[in-house]
Image (tube, rainbow, N blue to C red):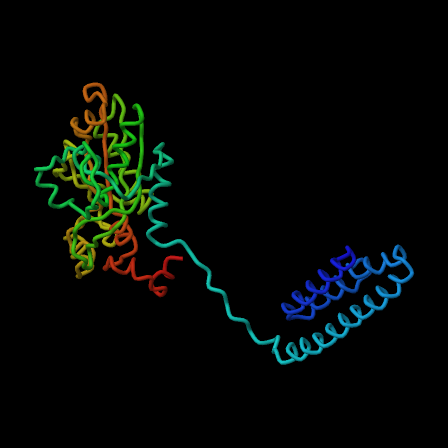
Length: 353
């Protein structure tokens, strides 16, 4: 097969293929220019005829003219079909609006909290959702026999590592912080957002899967006042500058001393429930007239945790805090059922776009 034969065959096959996917007048005109225009492949084949022998000139002249006539006829038929199709379309009819996606409310809340803390100097570190028992429990001062395991024990995998125990779906994002403490040297300030798992029955306020943001800071002169200052700045930036903060003694295995953190009710806007009830004559549906809302737990990092991460607890101190993103979002937007976040009901999600 000569070079002329190859080019002719390729040209004919390409035209047949491209003609099948033409559905508008604009596409049809582009196709006509491509195959019948002055710079088309067909025109280039015609330009090679003078280089052929006398016998070949006659053969190829007829053959190329037949192909040109075929292309012209097909384009004319296609043009009539396209025009008929376009005339049946009502171009003045309103088009359907395209629904735009948006950031999920939980992602938006998490990003907002992380952004506030980043401006204070915290670095975001995301860890894996599969962890071993040592990072998830032992390194956090939760040994095998500790009663706190009953609350944190989660979904185990059929994999085990020597000296690290079984693998499981992490029950908090603290293992990410343990890895940072072991791999870096103080001073450091880190926050770790992510998905966690607990053996909780699903109801309006609990889920077996939810999202957390945990943070810690370690340095030689860190104290409880620094912790309170960070948390006060966080809640006033995220909720309102009028929000007040309250810390209540509590117990966590990985911090000592530990505290639960409350904020003044963002609905009542006052921690004095008696005054609010007297003025309005009704009870608050969010705080139940307590005037305070629990939002997170915190404390000074336990010396055992520092030592497990090979940090000298006599030289360095640190604080840590952790919060559930769903709870923060529920308080901010007055949502009364955690399950709404996971149902993907657009009517619910559109409220936060």
